[in-house]
Length: 205
Image 1 (tube, helix red, strand yellow):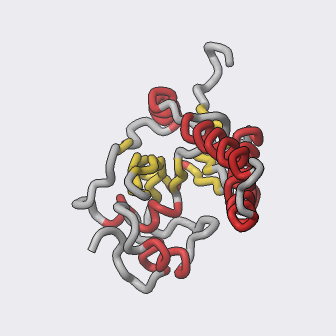
Image 2: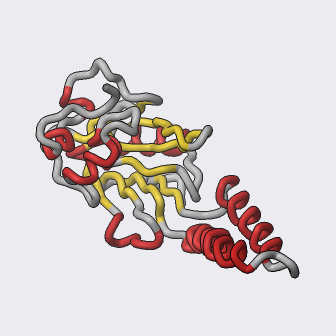
């Protein structure tokens, strides 16, 4: 990229600490299961779980598909490498009112997410609907529409400084929050997914 080029920012799936640890752990457990004397039942249950899981994580890292991109057109939310085209979404700048970083607790740890806050009435995104809303309504610390426009930082790394620079260049004044402001009015957090869910409000009860 030249000095005069717009500071578009993108992150691709690759080898992060979580992916490397998962693949290494799966490989080690698979090797143990293949040792002589390991019960057949343990092999039958463990090999598909650890072997397939490790291979899938390696596939994600090697795919090098775009996980998150900010440019002059808006934000590209990369999908799952297994169903990349069907789960990838593009959000134009006209639909974006902010960005948010949030975390979801999972089995004693937490997974970081980055998402865009969309204007009320923005078009639906892949996976955005009543069933999806009902599935996450009581499980996440953010509004439901933010969930649908977020991506887990799992299998890729995000450079917050470069993201901030790109947002400032393409959409000056667009806020970037570390956590969503629960006291904000509906247009900031968005009411789109809540509308799909029959008017129920997202977030904590």
